[in-house]
Length: 456
Ligand SMILES: Cc1ncc(COP(=O)(O)O)c(C=O)c1O
Image (cartoon, rainbow, N blue to C red; front, side, top):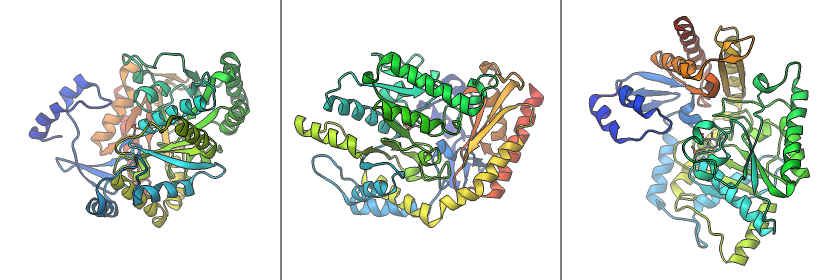
C-alpha cells in the first residue's frame, strides 16, 4: 500500500488503462525497487511480476550492465539525432545489428527507430501509404487486422487495433473505410463444431480471400499481425495459419507486417515470433524487449523492395518527411545494444528453451480447475481463460470481472498478473525466471483461483 504522501501525490497522475474513479478509491501499488523477477512496493512487500511489467522487462527489474551502458552514453553523447544526414555511432550500430538479426528468409534492409510500439506501427502504416503512392497505386491503402489484435493506441495504430476499449468514445477507428477485420484465429471460440485445426485454417483463409474479392486487391495494402496475439488474450494461431495467410498476401501483393512488439526477442522461443510461427514478413516492428523495457525505443524494419520505392519518392519530393526527435536516441540505442549482448551472454534462448516447457506444464496442470476453460500458450507466454460453463465454452458476464478478481487475489499473495479480454489471465514473465520462481508463481495462481471459485 502506498504511503500517505505518495498516495496524495498520485492524484496528479492520469493513469493509463485504469478505471479512473475506482483508482481514486483504491490508489496505486507503488513500486520502488526491483530485483530479478520481483518488484518491491513502498511498504517493502515483494511481488513476482508474472507479466514482466507490460510484457517487456525481459531481464527482470534491475540490471547493472544496462545502467552502466546508459551512464556511459550520457557522459559521452547524451543526445544526437538522425535527421538531415546526421548519425551517431550507437544508432548506426543498432540498426546494423537488427538487420543482421532479422528473421531468416526476410529481406530486411533498413531500420527506422521510434520510441514505442504504437509509433513503430504508425510509422509502418505511413510508410505503407507512402510506398503505394510512390508506386502510383493511390487506391491501395486499406489494412487488414484480426479481431482482438492489439497494435497500439496512437490514432493510426489504434485504428488497426481491434479491441473495443481502444475505439469506444475515442471516435476510432479513423474514418475513410481503410481498416478491415478478420476473425480472431482462436479455435476455442471460433472453430465450428467438428472443425479441426486444418479445416479452421481453411475457413480463415477463405474468409481472407473473400474479403480481398469483395474489396478488390487493388485497395488492400497490408495485413498486420502479432505472431502470438498478446493483449487480445494470448492467442496462438493453429499450425499452418500464417503460411496460408502469407501465401494469400503474396498472391495479391499485400504487404505482411509482423508486429513483434511482444513476441520479439525470444518470448516465443525463437528470436522472432514470426520464426516460431513460420512466416517471413515484409515489415517488422519491435519494441519492449529490444531494450529489456529499460528505456523507450522501438524499431521498424522494412524490406529492400519497400525501401527502394520510399527512397525514390523521397528524392522526388526532396525529403522523407517523417521522424521523431528521439528516433534512435543514443542512450536508448546504447541500452538496446547492451541488451542484445546480454541475451547472447546469458544464453536467453537456451534459458527459454529450458523454462518454457515448465511454464506450459504449470498452465496445463490448471486445465482441470473448475474455472479454467482454455489453457493456451507457447514459449514463455500463456493464458488461462476463465469460463462460467466449460462444456458450452461460455464466458462470465464481463461485468462480474472474474479475471480481475483473480488478479487481485494473486496480488494479495505476492504475484502481479493481468486480466485480459474474455476473462483471460495472461502470463509473460521475465525471460530470466527460474523453475523455483515458476513453481511459486503458479502455486499462487491456484490459490487465487480457488479463492475466487469459492467466492462466486
Ligand atoms: C503487439 C503490440 N503492438 C504494439 C503495442 C504498443 O506499444 P506501446 O505501448 O509501446 O505503444 C503493444 C503494447 O503492448 C503490443 O503488445
